Each structure stands twice: as C-alpha cells, then as structure tokens.
Length: 165
Image (cartoon, rainbow, N blue to C red; front, side, top):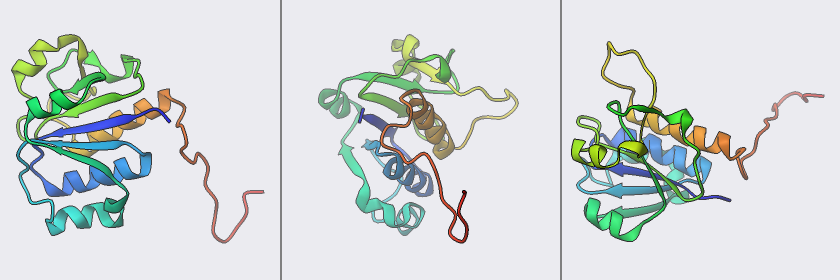
C-alpha cells in the first residue's frame, strides 16, 4: 500500500488530534506530531476522542519543524485557507505528506510563501474563517485515498440482521 502521512504542526486542541488519530488508524495513514503540543499526549480528552484506536497508530513525534524536515522527504502538501491551489487538483504520489498547522494560526506564512506551488486549500465560503482541523484532515486524506482507489480499505458494508442479496 502507498504511504499516506498526516502531519500536524503544533496542534492545540486534544479532541482534534484524537479525531485525526482515529482517521489515521482506520485509513492506515501515518501520523506525525511536530513541535509543542497544546496538551499532554496522556490527556483524557485526546484518548477519549481517539477511543481504542490509539494502539493502531503509526505515530512519530518531532521536536520542531527542522527536526521533521531533517527526517522526512516526499511530496509535501501544505493545507491552508491562504493557499491559491485547490486540493483536488493535486496528483498525490506515494509517500505524500499532508501538512496542517495550528487550529488558531495555521501554518507560518513564511513556510507557505516558500512553498507556493505545494500549498492547497479546501474551497469554502469566504464569510467564515475555516473548517475544523479534524474535518480538513479527513477531507484531504480521503481525496488522496480516492485517487489511489482506496488501497487495502474495505469498500463495502454488511447489515447485521439482513443480507443485501
């Protein structure tokens, strides 16, 4: 299976990181947490949001952005409301990194400016600030997986009391 990486730079809200960890667990995506977190990894809210999925995560922690970039390479896609490019227009390759910033600030503008062609946005009304971080991660992750034809993911369901036949 191709490798999908979700990168959170200084996430501040434990419930968002918990929800994102669940998305990573059910899709097989790797989770990367970069820099100072706004919560303890043992935070009960984080564990509650991630439920019993935490043990299924492939998770790596980094001291800061430099530590992350020194240890990783691949296709970096920076998600931001300030980006010019639509996230659906990108052809996502194996070992792609979907990078998301803090809930309250997003990614640093200097980083975005230095990577203009790799910055993407999720279209939304311009009268509101942004989508929730965990929703944005899910949208980005599932676009990548859709392009890859949902490799190794179960793509059908079954009823408990009835058969679909």
